[in-house]
Amino acid sequence: MTYRSQLGQLGEDIACRYLVENNFKIVERNFRQKWGEIDIIAKAPDKTLVFVEVKTVCGVEKLPMANEDKHISAEDQLTRAKLTKLQRTASLYANHNPKMINDRNGWRIDLLALTLQCDSESIASLSNSLTIQNKDCLINHYKNITL
Image (cartoon, rainbow, N blue to C red):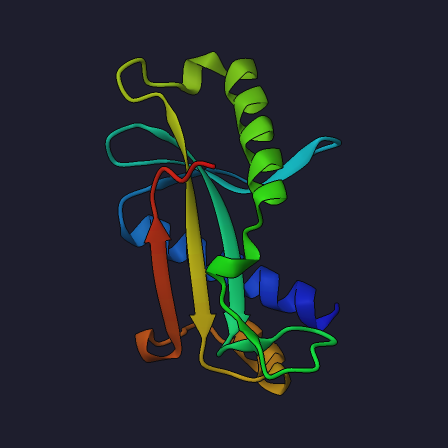
């Protein structure tokens, strides 16, 4: 498993735990189709169907191949193109699963941006750990994101 895939998997595991702790019900993980993918599909406490995109970084990661000392946050990793694909995939999922949609609340897309206090060498040990302390992970939950 590569560093990036380990970091992504760890971020999604933490995101699922965060959602469950906040009374969301996980419906599905890693829904993939040829037109796109959704990290987590969940039901919010108010029964809204929520498509969750998870972006994870260790501390503040440097941009690859950057000559300057630039940094990218977890939030910066959700590009316009990625959000467009995500909206299309979520819409298609919702259209194929109308019974999952609450008539009053509909569906939405959320972003969970995670910043782990670690370095690339500690990802494997964090992945094997049963607990990540709050001080080790900053989670920003953005609800109902749009273009």
